[in-house]
Length: 52
Image 1 (cartoon, helix red, strand yellow):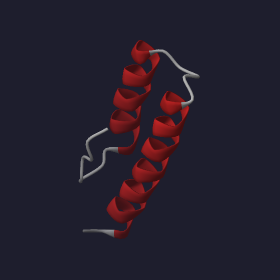
Image 2 (cartoon, rainbow, N blue to C red):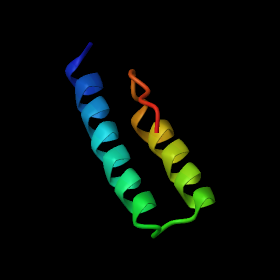
Image 3 (cartoon, rainbow, N blue to C red):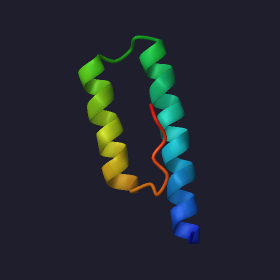
Image 4 (cartoon, one colour):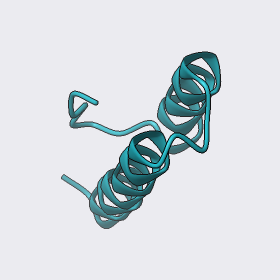
């Protein structure tokens, strides 16, 4: 795994954690959560896809 892949995976994991917190606080609708999760996957291209 390259440094860029490790960095992308760490950013992806951190962003998913924040998304989960927002979902738990009911700050976002289910549609918004799914759209953001897919956008994170597209932008960061993680090599390890963690379940949300």
